[in-house]
Structure formats: C-alpha cells, structure tokens
Amino acid sequence: MTQGCSVIDDDLSTCARDLELNIEVKMHTKLDLQLDQQLNSNADNPVRRIIYNQLADIFTDHAHDINVTVFEENSSNIAHNIDDVIDSNQSTYPISLRMANYDALALANLDDNAVVNYVSKDNHGQAMIEIPTADVSSQRTGLFAARKHLTITGETSQTIQMTLTQINSAVSLIIDAQNISRDNVEVFVQGTASGFMMADSVFLFDKQITTRADLPIDATPRFAAPDDNNTQPNVNANLCFTAVTLPSSDTEISQGCYYKIIINTTNADATVTHTELSVPEQLPAGRLKIIKTQMQSDGRVLPTENTNIGVTVKLDWNDGGQHDVEL
View: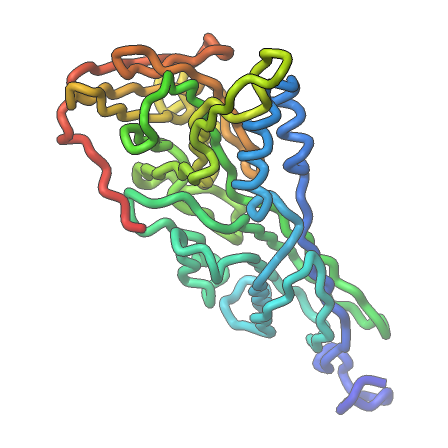
C-alpha cells in the first residue's frame, strides 16, 4: 500500500508511487574502434596513441555529474529533480511520482565543460545546451543527453530506464609539417552546431561557431636517431590538432561542404598562409573524424588521402581574420 493512501474508496491516481529511475551513459561507437577504422597501419601507431590520449576522457562511458529534471506532461512544472556527482556510467535513484504522464530530460558532464551553458533548464520546451560566444576553445568533456516520456502506472513496482548518448563530436587534423615549428600553426573548426534543444533533440545553427583546435605538447613532432638496422624508430613526425565540438549539420553549409577546417601558417618571412579545407561529409554526434594532410613549402596544407576535400588557399593572408578565442 502506498503511503498516505487507503485501498478503499480513495482515487489512487492522486497517490505517489515509489519507483526506481535508472540512469545509464552509453557510447554508440567506442574510441578504439573509431581509431582502428581510420588509423590502421603500423606507421599510424604514434598518431593513434596521441589522439587516444587526447580523447580518452571525451569518448567514454563515464559520467562525472548528472542532471535529471522530470516535468509534468505538457508543462514546465517540475515533479522531480536530480543533481548528482556519480563518477560512473550508471546510477539508480528512488523517486516518488503520482500516476500520470511526465517528460524527463537528462544531461551528463556539464560541470567541467566551460564552452557550453545549460540554459532554461527549468522550462521543458526551452531547455537547451548553448555555446554563448562565437570563438571558443575545444570542449573538455563528453556531453551526454537523453529525453524520455514517462507513464507512471498503478504497478506496485516500476523501473524507468534513461540511456544517455553523446551529443558532441571531434575532429583531428594530422599535419606532416615539414619541420614547421608548432608555434607557427593555428587550426580552427568552423560550421558546427551552436546549441542543442533538449526536448526536441535538435541541434541549432543560429550563429557561426569557430573552435580552436588543441595541440598538446606530446602531439608535436619528435624525431630520434635510426636504430642499429638503420630504420626509423616508431616516433611521431606530425602535428596532431584536435577539436571537440558539437556536430555538423546534416545539410551542406556550402556546395560540397558540411564544415570547414581552417589552418593559418606563419612562414619564415612572417607572411601568413591561410588554408580552408571544406569537408564533404557530415560530422555526426559521438563520432571522430581524422584527416591526414601535408604542409607545403609555402605553408599551404593539402589532404593526402581524402581527395574529395575542397581546398582554398590565400597566400600572404592579412591577420584581419584572426580568431581571438576566450580560453
């Protein structure tokens, strides 16, 4: 018998039912598998190791923090809210709801992501992930989200399952840099989503977002003397830039292009070469795209494997288009 209700004459639909809400964070495609699909030769091993270290904490089934809000159906009245630090991929919460219909929204790993804001989270129809500024740094957490319609029945026990899936993505640009210093190359990703509507599960593209790619110190070229057999040891000879962003649109932003990668190279004579790579395929949520390139003597960067990528180059580019990113 539910507390506060009689089994005779009372309308049990007004009584609170005890149930369990099970929250699970789930990856659709593991990082190891995505790396295996795109970096499948022994020569790729140094780069594979670097990208794995960059993204292991992004593409993971691990949630640090969780926010769950249960709304009354067709309303912004909050029936239950959970804010918790779980440091796990799963957590179960006992909650009480009266017999009715509800809509729940869940978001994981927001606390340490300084790029996005969770706005209007007390309003079911308006709750959204928002990137508030146009020029941003790479995201530092894997964002996971879910929505679910709940129907609470008169069953004596009921378990509600909410499975959160990843809503951000990553792009890695590998540059055979021809001994160019790491301080002379900047990489940006442009054309990805600016927000995500939680209730509709729809990405927003209401402003142009430019994301500065990271270049960790271990993602720069390292060379070593040949071994006794006069063969080059397994070391990294590339620059490995990575940007964690929201996904691209499922429609082209220009002909044959879903998003762009921008590379600015400062040459020895202090001129700047501006290269734009137009990527002809979507960047879906939860996925990693790796693009291999080579830098030419004049600073331009050209794809080495995917010849469908469009290339636009501006030599002696002025810095009027420089992106100042808030870190």
